[in-house]
Image (cartoon, rainbow, N blue to C red):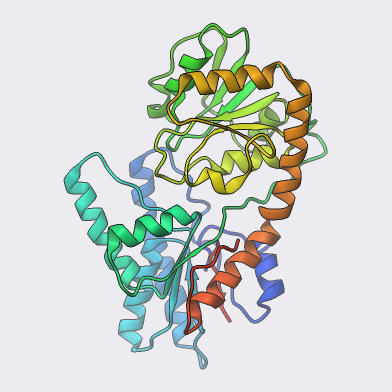
Length: 352
């Protein structure tokens, strides 16, 4: 199942090429994009109802599916309820699971027990990094928990109207776990233009005001892609080194052949090599970040070399085709009797 996909998405096409007998149910909601917590919460009932409806139809059929592959926790709960009602058991695979802590210790406790219950309802869980599998085993303490790793991927289509060039500025983007305060501190006194694309207020509160820093609060879709295409290079400063973050912007930049400076964390390390396909900087270090910015700003040859290698790395490892193959291989492995953690290459389809 894929609650916020369309039938003609390349990801859906790739799944059906490998699993031609699968059923892909799409379109419960337009997308999972949200700007406030309230907007996010209001989508949860829709996801539950979507999962419930698909589950009822599938389990009332003459031949039930071999597995359900879903993307959200409300769908897991809905399918578990349906199985309880119909008294039919079908394995559930949760894909792309990410667990984050909260400032409130009570909220963290409640969320941990809630997701422990959700994970216990699954046959397996697909994550985006090896570190996450280690962390989740420690946090949730479930003997039955099966985990697989599939690196994040994106379908990046570059319209012919977008020109890839160097426009004399540096770009940073994203909202989750971004340390824009550190970036603005490293930028202090630099004769370079910086554009920060972020549509929420919280990550930008620590940014130090500068005439060389421009905040783009409403930059999406092709406009965002245009900003990446015109950047000399991209910077992704990560705040929490224990959480999986930054991959979406990293891969979008790689797909357009742009060199990326990114914080070295246990999760980002799995997405490239230092000075080959990207440029790693030390976590929380203004000096390391500033030195990397100056190095790339003053070395067009290095920018071109890393950018070219980054594009090739994306094509080999992080396209929709690579991702679909990785997810389906992970599902097949999780459904097998003998399971080992696989590093393959997220989505939601109903397995054949």
